[in-house]
Length: 231
Image (cartoon, rainbow, N blue to C red; front, side, top):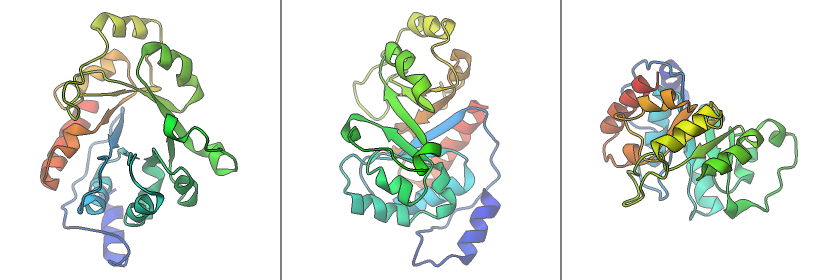
């Protein structure tokens, strides 16, 4: 990823894609899926940081902007280099996923009337959120993957506590409900991500542990730790 990023940074038009100064280092591949969920709000350095992060780390980016207009979301997408489009999943304005041939969409109640018709949707990744173990059991085989939350006390949402006891999770693991199709979400950081593989989860989705930082170098340190413990 770093070599690829250096190539397009040297050759693309700076007026087209937002870039920034960022030192790339080779990253260790991960066996567990790592998903980074965007902040709900936009911020000035966002496209620059996304390009830099995705050039170094092989995570999947979920763009979750529930209050954004289609034009606002499309503007952000146009500032991200197309080489990363196959690793981007949208939570809203699904038509943009087909237009830009993104990895796919994350299904939610806000967009239930959208029709998944056409060749693109036969190969697109479609995931969804679950907030209970029965939901996971019901939906996981209908989607490429589902998220289950909150597994730990939330970092980004004050007072949003873990929803499952250790015995509940062990029971779900024993029944095969939690498996590689289930992504843990909620309160995940470098101190607890290593627990997820032993629990049987197929990966981790993170938000607060990334975007609570105000410097790109701090985010890089966090991603290094997450990638290390995900292996």
